[in-house]
Image 1 (spheres, rainbow, N blue to C red):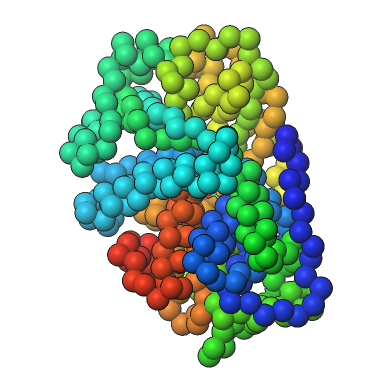
Image 2: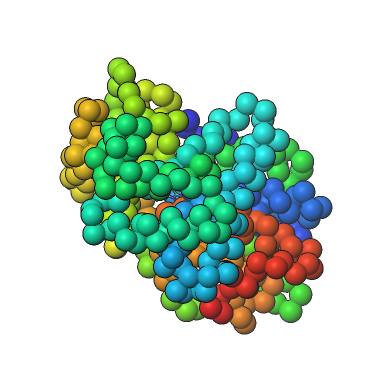
Amino acid sequence: MKDGIINSYPSLTRDISTDVAIMGAGISGALVAYYLRNSGFSVTVLDRRHVGMGSTAASTAFLQYEIDTPLHKLCGYVGEENAVRSYELCRQAIYIIENICKLLKPDFDFHIRPSLQYATYQKHMNDLQKEYELRKKHGFDVAWLAPADIQDKFGITAPGAILSEDGGEVDAYILAHALIAAVHKQGHTVHNNTNIVNTEQRERGVVLHTEAGYKVKAKKLIVACGYESLKYVPKKIADIHTTYALVSEPLADIKGWYKSSLVWETATPYLYFRRVNGDRILVGGKDDNYHHPNMLPSVIRNKTAMLETAFGKRMRHIPLKADFSWSGAFAVTKDGLPYIGQVPGIRNTYFALGFGGNGITFSVIAADILRDELCGRKNADRELFTFNR
Ligand SMILES: Cc1cc2nc3c(=O)[nH]c(=O)nc-3n(C[C@H](O)[C@H](O)[C@H](O)COP(=O)(O)OP(=O)(O)OC[C@H]3O[C@@H](n4cnc5c(N)ncnc54)[C@H](O)[C@@H]3O)c2cc1C
């Protein structure tokens, strides 16, 4: 709301041809478009809304390599080597985003922030310690905080916590706009208000049909429609959940918040919070494991009150009152990892599905893997996120 519609692009009003059609101009489609542009492809980005107006606009701007499935649990799904590699790719993605932001604009609003995960209850301590040991063993820059340290640095009463130095903060909506603007400036085509209602996979390419009756002929199609992509995948790969967030009214003096860290906890669903522009606080969580497209305002009001109370219990010294609140849908996969690549049997079509509560780092991984696929290079990490798992 603060940033409004930064740019709007015209809808498609004729038939066109392109190397690569990208369906979806959220952070995933924008990053894929940027990577492909840099590799010499001619791209056309099409979105049924405006840039970033899907889940990207709802994002709370946390960049964390710690995905929704803890590392020690991910090992159980995909083995230790693959789990560690997935975490490492997410960690690297934070710094890739930092570099992209600098290239787009030297003073882009990006910040490296530590990330604190505290144990919500004493009974979570064994798992959290196991998580700490495993990350430490694999070279992640983490420290263990005892109750006195947590109290001292954050004013939170908790039995233990992991403080991780690698985290970040970026407004995914502004970043998606900046990436799309950079792509558009170099002569690539962007269309908003262009709903793709059908895709026809052919021997030598794909034909996309718009709701207004026009055709886009493409050699390759990238589907980056966020959780709305699920209808294009023949098997069930994710559930759709709803999450809630608020931003507080400005606060006079926020004390004791170590390096403006991103804070979250071990409970499921977890509460998470960070500082915004120095004088406000963002709080998110209280997820539901279902999604309704027309969320009732009364539900958001109730969830906002629950988030205020939950935050108050943890940060007693900060009296917080919501100024803005919202909800959004996100897709949850069985292992917490995204799905990237081709679905067997769907020709010339690639998926960039940056799912989960930390989907922005997954979008970077998707852009990297799909760029390699389209360039005919075998990306060593593609099997981690395949639809065949
Ligand atoms: C409340 C909330 C908070 C979050 N916080 C964080 C966070 O702090 N950190 C983090 O990393 N992640 C967070 N996430 C997740 C993150 O927002 C998503 O992973 C990310 O935005 C997904 O981007 P995307 O581009 O894949 O999808 P989207 O942003 O949903 O973009 C998909 C686009 O496809 C378009 N589209 C769909 N169907 C069609 C069609 N048929 N034709 C044309 N266009 C179509 C849509 O209009 C949309 O613009 C959060 C999610 C929510 C809901």
